[in-house]
Image 1 (cartoon, one colour):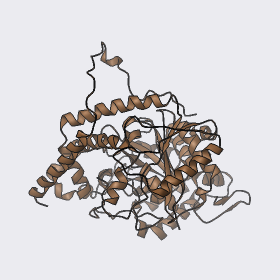
Image 2 (cartoon, rainbow over the protein chains, first blue to last red):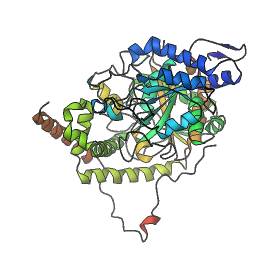
Image 3 (spheres, rainbow over the protein chains, first blue to last red):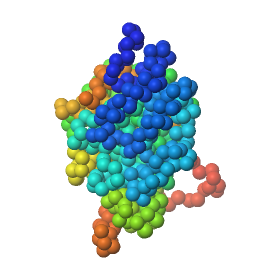
Image 4 (cartoon, rainbow over the protein chains, first blue to last red):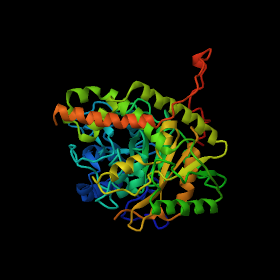
Length: 452
Length: 51
């Protein structure tokens, strides 16, 4: 814990959202002092990390000094630059959107303002929030860098969100996730990231990536912090639900990604097993489980659906300005333009069958636990490692089936990179995910370690 | 890049998409149409449990 609540002293390092709220409620921290801490980290570190595309220091200062009220009063946060925030640049890392200033707030920006949160600015993203998984170093803003090892990838496409939270630049961030773009950055940077059941968090005012799989989601340092954000954003009571803890949860373990994917990195696999032992000691029931189809088939379906829908959304950009697009987005749109209608429909039929088959698993399990990524974060721009990192994952089943899912840190590699796991639950059962996340983090030491 | 490069890249990527499509299960049983399409079961009907 960075905030010593017993002595009243607030230490100088990053603090969690829950700690900040408690300190402000007790009168030991003001919104402006908290903002100054975040701005100091940004000034000191973001020149090397590139988490922010646009920092709105004057707007944040104004919001912090106007005595904010609400469930997130005075909490500095930031949002992926694919969501509009009135008066701020909205470039989405695309030359085709250079100079664009948003005139209205996305629904989530508006909601966070109502709850008193202090918007710091816009966070790094792949172009239009999508791509192929490859980094080509050809976008207007250079790629964000992982604070645990600046030579390594941050996870995408919400590339700045995990960086900002892990370093204490922001106490939470909002990104968007089609096949893992919130969960993968959370995994790569040692944070907690959640996607909810589709429709529970609004997408209004965000750039679309696909028609049928996009979801917004928060990234924060702890699962409890994520619960606080979700409760403020959509009126749930997940923080209270999460306090029920792990005891009694029926956890199914998906150890084997199945044919088509490699075995996970050994250190990630060991982290999963050690974490399962903790959950068992906390009173969870652990059983083996299996997906109805391999995760690699889910990836095939998600690629067909995602590329075709993206190509339909950005057809004009590809037709009129292909050379202004970055190579990753151009490749994705070219690929999507070549998808046959019968193949797109085959992917959607598989998606429905997969969703129906997944529904049967919830009779035996409250949570299905697996790795998210099968690899540790790769070095930036090294292929095929980057594409393998973003595509060989256990994240797409929840995307296809529209299931809520959570990623959290469950240790560190020998080289100091964060390990993680991925949990998904029945649609509507976010509470089970927060019970797992909050119970596990309260019983383990991992939240005490931040990137130097 | 030239238009020729784009065409070549598009052909490579279309082949990758076709390969992905070929790996999908496709031999689904024919479904008879329901009497009332609106009555079809929607997805994600899970009971909400958010505490």
